[in-house]
Image (cartoon, rainbow, N blue to C red):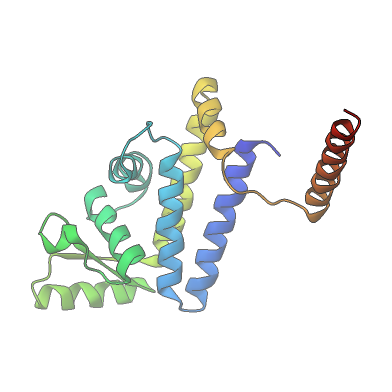
Length: 196
């Protein structure tokens, strides 16, 4: 499996896990996986030394938001990502300063409408998103990204190089083969030193 296929496989696993969490009404683990997945996809395009917030927002603006009808910005989603991943709350430093809307999450479209009404009643600068729709929209964004990257051989090579650094599924047999080869190499070195 090449690194490009590995991206698709790993992102499919992330989305599947996020969907299973949502099916079990485990919304925070689902959101954590979703935001981590966006982070990972965005990191494939990061310039050396570029800050997470910069490449996250760029990827969201380019690939995710055009797939949606959401009334939030990449800044709002970056703030939401920070809030969920770091505090399991809707409040990020950005939203507390008024630089981003808070994001609330619902299990269905009907819940979105109800939460929006409550948010309005309390004068919250917030947006409510349906988690299932977020997962589907992220999937669509990944597909758009992968098709675009695959058509550019230079860009694809750069993306594959970054994905080549990811953890991978390593079989126990491969690890055993390495350890046997390492022991044989060390024995050869030891034997060579002993004969000197």
